[in-house]
Image (cartoon, rainbow, N blue to C red):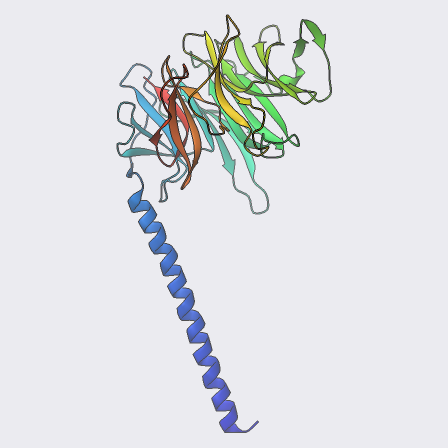
Length: 340
């Protein structure tokens, strides 16, 4: 190859590299512009101070999913104005819940090779009071009405409730003594009025009646059950079949839950129902889409829950008595909790 040929090859290589570099810059600029547009189109989020005011103005706290510097932070809006600008706390959580000035935050610690997880118990100013290691991917969290007991569920294998190839671990902690029941599967089970033992028992989705009594889902033998739990007696008692991720109403009379319905897709098998605990009567809500969430009661008549949205999840609401229609309450949000 003579000097002229080498020069031509060099010039072509430089031109090719310049074209590739320009294309990369343009692609990056396009992605940045797309993100800027998404952030501009999404809810306004600003930094500030977020606190759990058990006796103050009612707030709605959520994990913010809007693009920008405050994505995944716990944010607050006035409960009466869910579309208002969100105040970001600086605290990032995968799952969150709060009651009576106590919060529970399930958080990821990003490692070079693997992630680890932890449960943080928070005070009214969202400061960490205690840390517990969590053995898997966070999925559910709840605080008792008094704030004295917290619970959380993680996936220890699998990452979806839709199939059967998953296992969970559910723990309950006392926020006064820090006593921990780190696996509710160790509780004694009474099924259909008789003591029950099986290696495939799986428990998840606690909802509290008080500091001692709670409800949860128990799975065994390919079926799920609503169970009533007792921390003092360390017992679980089955009450009703085909119940997952229960949520107890504020007056303690009803449980909202997701129910597997015949004919639904295996990937989207659930509908949102409400169970009257006294009569055993089930009521289907007007939400006809599949709900993979532990619904939250926003009062005695209305349920709040997450559905897939443009940036992860949106929050929707529907009457608990089967009337009305579902409507979107907030975009780009998940893991709600009311305070005040």
